[in-house]
Amino acid sequence: MRVRVAVDALGGDREPAEIVAGALAAAADDVRPIIYGPADLDTHGLEHVVTQGIVEMDDKPADAVRNKQDSSLVRAVRAVGDGQADAIVSAGNTGAVLAASLLHVRRLPGVFRPGIAVVIPTDHGPCVLIDAGATADAKPEHLLQFGHMGSIFAQEVLGIERPRVSLLSIGEEPEKGNQLTLEAHALLAASSLRFAGNTEGRTLLEGETDVIVCDGFTGNVALKTLEGTVRSLLIALRAEIVETARGKVGGFLIRPAAARLRTRLDPETTGGGYLLGLRGLVVIAHGSSSRFAIENAVRMAALGIDHDVVGRMREALPERVVESARSSNPSGTTRG
Image (cartoon, rainbow, N blue to C red; front, side, top):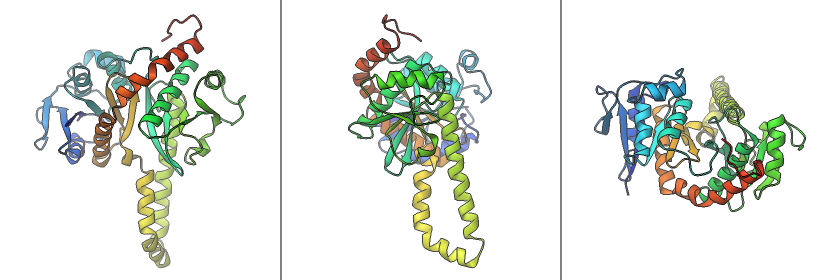
């Protein structure tokens, strides 16, 4: 089966030509990128759906989705909901992608809020961080569901048999954190998840857990801080290597190892994150994505279809959703 991936050509901080170049690089016998963008865009032979309008990064999400229905972002998301594409990749306004997805793709039954799941490379293999920016103002029951969704993703897609789930907080002790993390800790501890307690930001790359749960605001700050730190360290290392002749010799000797490290830690290698909890596959890429990142995001979307991420969520999530609803609201009424 050839996976159809709708690509928002106007999403992100770079020129549309950069997005198209990434999609073109990802095209293969089993991957069919479909470009959504203006009529004058050179798509180099890729299938092209002509759109009008652009969702800007500073647009209010709900207003953008309502008033710019023919924009590249909204049309690309709608293609998944209408069955014209199997997945969508956008580096555009995250809030608008979320709003358009809720309207056109819709949530899986019983899901309170979708969460962005990002795979983080650690010393002991991949780890899932959820939520990386979809729900900034989360409730404790949302974090409980993020734990279930992240656990299912780690088990079904990453192949981790019994994923350890941890809550991102300011200390390992159960009593550390704000009101949200304290209440979420109690729900997670009482759940059927393999809850390992709190974890701190300084251990994100150490691999002491398999799923890191947090609200979208905290997750987005943590992820961008991590990415910025890694980028700065790699730049500083390169500068030190070329400073002296001895450094250049040493740099030549460690170049293969340095290249492997850069590939493992560079967020563009992953390309983006899955927006879990929806009836279709949505991949949100970084706003600053280069053609390399877009290429990997398109391949990530195709991989998600191959692994049937949405189908596995649909199959495994229902009983977890019931547990989440009962834990957070004994009356059984789903809270949004």
